[in-house]
Every structure is written in structure tokens, then in C-alpha cells.
Length: 283
Image (cartoon, rainbow, N blue to C red; front, side):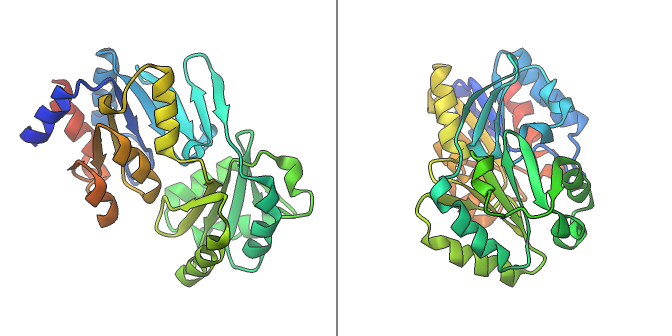
């Protein structure tokens, strides 16, 4: 730890970016007092804290948005960037409308719990919503999902583009082989980015959208260079911001591929991996 911490200090970190699920939240969906205290201390030292999540704005707990220093939120993998102090959206990037209906045709051929977000509202196919427990094996995430999606009769009807801009499409699978089939079918699209935040899902955004690019764009408006950023994450959708940060920290529960691009690997989210690093950095 000591060598990594010394490197962090020498970089003069001015911004901390962190994922929620699997990173600063425990598996039960809550943030520990230890992690909350570590973030508060960083905020009180004047460090800007940015939540960078695949969740929508409405899915970020108030317990986190109220922490000192949490001034910005990168939501939906970077499709929406929000000023948590002024309570206003800074920029939005939707999926190219020309490929939406074709993507919908692929999704309709498979057994999947699908939803999309537009204007921070999540819409889900009613028939799949009623079977959500089959696709979501984490009880706490299942309960969160039901609260943040609006079930509709036909999610993929011909009026789909009327919802535009659609900022993100989520796909959850009960059968891993279905996930692989959909992932392969989506490879032909050049104007979307497909990643995963969980082992059983796929997340679709505009090809120009990812947490790393959104973070760099936001940091630029704050006159903060990438070398002064520390990022924390655990999933494939965190890879871009882990790689571009001055210090990229992968959680102990991350995949080997994410750990391989990180500067440092901390302990797991269940062991308060974020606090484990920040306590050393901020002391």
C-alpha cells in the first residue's frame, strides 16, 4: 500500500471519481459508515467527488448525493452529466436514432429483461417486468430495479424514436447463452458502445459515450488534468475511467481484465475497498 499511496500523494489528487454498485456500495446496496466518512473527509479537504455510475440520476441514493464534495454525477455510463450543487444537467448524449429500431428487432427475438432511459426516466416491457426476479439474482438490486422502472405494454413499438434521445438501453439475462447471442448480434453496429456493469447484463450507449470520456470532459470544465484524478471501479463499464485517471483503482471484486489496466488493486467492496485507499491518502 505505501508505494501506491506515495504515488497518489505526489499526483496531488484534485478529483475522485467512483462507481456505485460493487465499488462504494456493499452488496446489499448500502454505503458503509466507514466509506461515507472517508469520502466526507476527502470532500472537506476540497477534493471534488464525482459519482460515475450506470444508474440514472434517480438511482443515486440521497445518502451519497448529500456527502460533502459530491458535486457532480455521471449517470447512465456517461450519457448524462449532472451538477449536483446547481441541480442542473450539463450535457446529454443519446443513442443514434437510425439504429434504434434495428436494435429493438434483435432484442425482441431473445428472452431478456430490457429497458431504456430517456430524460432520466426508465421504461421497461411489462411482461418482462413482471418476471424481473428471474433475470435479477441480487435481491437488493431487484428491489431497486422495480422502483426505478415504469412498465409499459410494448417497449419496442414503432414509436420508439419518439422517446429520443434514448440515453441508455439495459439488458438483463437469466440465461448466459442468450446474453452471448445478443452481444454477438450487436457487434455489427458501429455507432453504439456495448459494455457490462454486471456479469448477467449488457449496457448500450452511444459509441461516443463512456465514463472515462465524460469524466475528462467534466474535468476539463473544472480545469483539472487527468493526472490529478483518482478513479475507483469494479466493472467493464469502469475500464475507460480507470485507464485515463492519474491513479486508477480496481476493487478486489473486479474482473482480472479490469485489474490488469488499473494502477492499484484494493480490497473488495464488502471490505470497504474505497475507504481502505482514501484513509491512507487523506490522513
